[in-house]
Length: 262
Image (tube, rainbow, N blue to C red; front, side, top):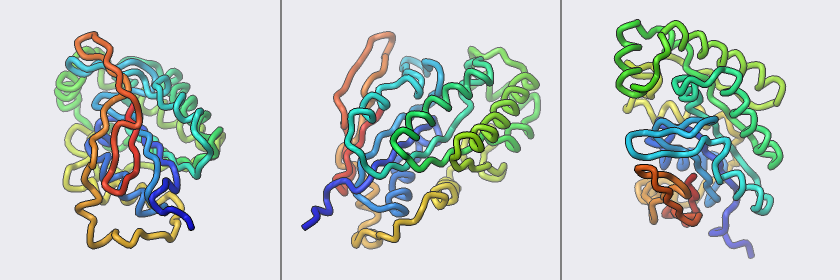
């Protein structure tokens, strides 16, 4: 007899602020799509970058492409794997070149394809970024990235280059790339409107194959499912320059899915 409580699959979730704010929701939607329970490996965090260490107020995190998630993934047994890469673009305001950003993303793609993962990537929200006025761009750049000195024109030029590079990479590496429409995003051009988050992520998650398996508790215990049984904490971070470590998996969902956070 198969123990239905054992992980049936593996979810890998990579992103920054948008994914951080909606981590439980995205996990729920993906498990609704492909089945549950599963192992969840997430590299998230406000201001997170793919190719460079990022510091937000007093907390620092390594670049996603260099974090401990990949070491753990390489040591795990084979399992059906589904990966979502989103929130690409913070590297630009950390003043990495488009080539550096694309190399970091491709390192992640390479590791995932070694695991035969089914991969969905969201492209940069080109339309919503381009509609930012000079005044609005400067206001939000100074608010979120006060260390950044890039002009609006230079930022948009780099965004266009990364956007085009991801289109090319999706063809070369054979993963699904999702374009993001401007109507999902708020006045800063990069954060999804709060009241649209579920619809936004539902639209992305539907790009994964539908397993046709729906847990019997899905409807009547949905609210319970969305709660943490144990909230995950970062495997490694710095706080005021001091390194802090935590063994993984550090979190667990109500359906007993283990969650590792990097």
